[in-house]
Structure formats: C-alpha cells, structure tokens
Image 1 (cartoon, rainbow, N blue to C red):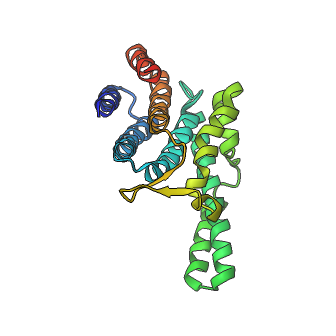
Image 2 (cartoon, rainbow, N blue to C red):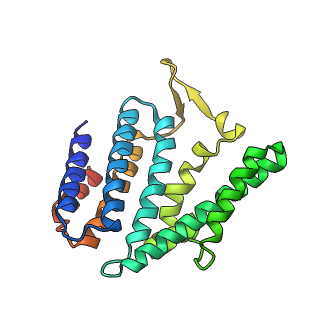
Length: 230
C-alpha cells in the first residue's frame, strides 16, 4: 500500500530528528516510544483494512487513537515548561491507577481471591503516592482541551464510532454480516474512511511532536492534505 510507505517515511523522519535533539529528556523518550508504538499500530491497522478485516482494524484503531490523544495532551503547551509534561503524565498515571483499583475491587468482591486483594493493595499504595496530583480529564475532557470547538466532532469520531467495537453488545453483534469469504463486516462501512481515520491519528501525533520541537512540518502537512482530499 502506497500510504504505508508515506506514513513510514513520516515516522522515520521524525525519529531521526528526535535522535538529533540536544535535550534528551523524558519528553524525547516518550515521543520516541510513541513513534515506535504508533508505527507498529498504524501499519497493522492499514494492513488489516487492506485485507478487508475492518472489525479487527477498528479494535486496534480505537486503542491507537487513545495513545495518540493522551500523548498529544501530555506535550500540549509543555514547550519550554517540562514540569507541565511531568504534571500531565502523573495525572494520567493517577487516573489509570484509579481505573485499575475500580476493576480489582469489583473482581475481589466477585471472586474473593487473595491474589487479587494483594494486587489491589499494591496499586492502592502507588495511588497514595500521588495524593497531591489531580486526576486527568476523561476522554471527553481530553478532546475538549485538545480540540476546543471541534471537540465534539473528534470525540464522536474517535471514541463514539469505535466504542461498540471495543465494548461489544449483543445488539451490535447481531448487526454484523458474514461475506462469502467468511469475513465479518458492517453494512454500509467504508474502508476508505477507516484509512483516513488512521492517517489522521498519525498526522495528529506528528503535528504535536513537530510543534513541540519547532521542526518544519510543511512537507508532511502538504502530503497529508493530498491524501485526505484524494
């Protein structure tokens, strides 16, 4: 797929630029890790779409989108203020720990398992170390802080449309069809839209990292606009 080649070139370009920055701190490490993860996610998503495995692609796309949103939120407005990055990173960690605690509490109440209880106590200890840190916004709040007036649109696209794939209900499963080749699909789904959603996530991540480091983004922006409008 030609798009694979283009997006991989974007990732490779940014990775090279990041290795050359003089300020090698936790932001740089986070961005490098986000690039590697995103490159692997997006390549797999695009390959699945090419193979008409759109349901599987949507599951990965939902996870990929969340990684992108959280990374962008962490580095937004943090240029020259690394403490802003540290604070947001801790807020995300605190929210994640709280979600794990909720899950483990429900599991312990249901199964009365001592190993679950031990794991719960360890995570509660980690959470107590962040007592002075605020929780991060939920997905809707993250979109609102990142996209302002377009927050509702992005939230609907990234989290709303893909929500049922991750949190499947019987009513949704009954809407799925099976092709003559045994492939699952939803009526009316458009693989081109999925491709553009994936590329838009890539673009969003790169845009925020390029902006943070003041790298020239004009070439990638031009290529993205051509793909988006094709």
